[in-house]
Length: 123
Length: 254
Image (cartoon, chains in turn yellow, cyan):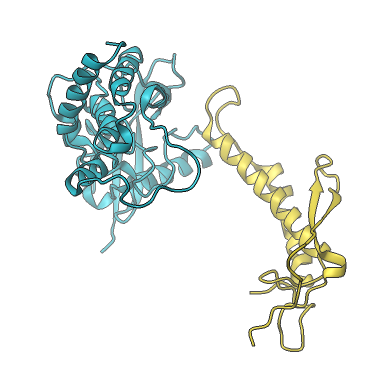
């Protein structure tokens, strides 16, 4: 299972189209004042679309492969995940800046005291 | 083999806890016999939503018979007529083409209707909070077999622990009693050594809370046992009564 940058760009465009369609055409029966399972579900769909878009942003920002997060552009000669610990050994925390705004990136470094980061080898 | 059936549903619709309810007739068309009852309701709701009408509110979560969230009274029987089955595990192959199905919420004074078939069963949570727990020390796990448990007791405790707290017992009971639920929750602990330290308080505290929440008492109708999707035995109610009396002798809370 792998991803590539073209596919991620394409998915980003598709999600933006889907989101636009969702907000334009969504019909939620019932009212907001009482128990409304349709409203709950519509809210979840809105969340999933936002979350999916952010995951793509994050995947595009992380220009390396790491374990199961395999970007085809970053592989070793033996087609294993090619890490880039110099630039990407961190947790990416994205801050929500409001609807339609780009999220703000916060880098939370990962520090390893007892293990050394290495390329995985099955040999 | 799967086939397609058409059904007429008489569904209880109620806007909210204060609202006046009524039966509404809906057609469930092209229902695969491989669907579960809840999936059949999903199909009806999808159609209602596309018509911009309010779908039928109903409780559901795991849809594999273990969470205790689903439940409605189907043709007068909680979770339908199939024995030992939650509503989510009741499949449409048990119905015939052209059947008319009455669907009502679990009714009891202590279970307020939230909307349509969705029912507030948090009264059960308050009974558990009153005593349905044991105290254990934190830290490393105790050595296996440090507390010997006879096999027959372990089996009975596990049988009682099958209760998923769905509330079908209450809906089935003419007194809207929660005795089967409470007895299962008391028994799963009373049968094991880990449950003994609080035994003197537990039965009394839980029965008191059951009364306070507005549930009735047991008059041995045994309908709860017949409708329980986990087939909890009413012998647990006898054990609850024994625990209750024993607790009364040994406790200042008598």
